[in-house]
Length: 373
Ligand SMILES: *Cc1c(COP(=O)(O)O)cnc(C)c1O
Image (cartoon, rainbow, N blue to C red; front, side, top):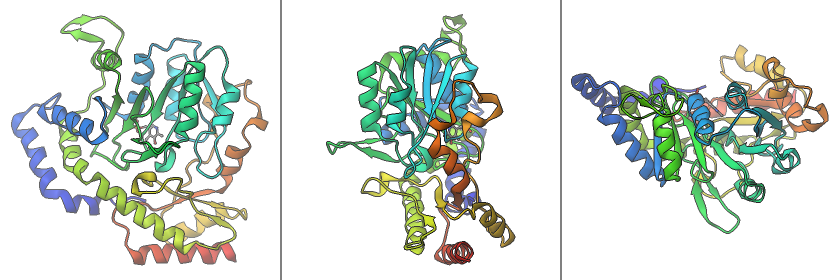
């Protein structure tokens, strides 16, 4: 699904040099590389504060802790996404409220959010799924109207931007009150282990969160709040520093591969290609290239691709509201028609920076021949 080795070949010298620097300095935790990466990412995103941490799941949890969400507060998020989002809501004893998504973008449906808002709702967590921003016009408007926080889960869309209806453009993860991201190796900006970060333009919140990631310490050995231990280590920061200057180029390569896939699938009655909402390369950064197979052949297509040595993935096969850990009598099947359908139709094809035309042609022919027969 990804080709991290091929990508490494292109940046080997730089990565090896900066990792050697970390080894020579022995500043493995909170070394100068971490601080430098933080500043470089702040510049890239045009955001006031980046707070590095250990992974994307921690980042989400710390966002919610930083905002002071309390047990019983309701947090609305998408039913069709990776489980990390609902997991941290539940871990903090907040009440997850899962809502349906839009069929064409796979992103959280603002109408469904609005229907789910109650007097206990405190926050919305849109996930910018597969590399494209959720409908941030509608989400920010709802948040304003109902006085809610917006926490963007930007694990899959770093480098993407959202173009507002008024033409204003903002990078994913800098639109809501706070955002989280992941540097898991297969993400668009991945390190060589675990890593994550939190972004915000709010000075006070940034201060709160900086202490929280470090055991709630604002002054050495003074623990003012309950915190966690969540750090990005210096080696990972060194890798990320080598990769960040290439992120736009990497995302461009993903987009070019996606465009080639979509062109090959043009006119196929049973194959729906991903919809791109905005113009410009940063409108969709294709963390995943995800098709919908309409003629009930998704599962057999997965088998067929595997038999032919083509990796593929089903993201995601089970709606979160049907996952054992998150089932709840509050949920009504009739509220999730889109997610319930998507889990049966979606299939993601290999997507990375090293795909060549021959591979794409081979895979698209395989898919088309199978789906049509
Ligand atoms: C990857 C991912 C996460 C979790 O990131 P980790 O670094 O693996 O903890 C959270 N949310 C979404 C949408 C993700 O894709």
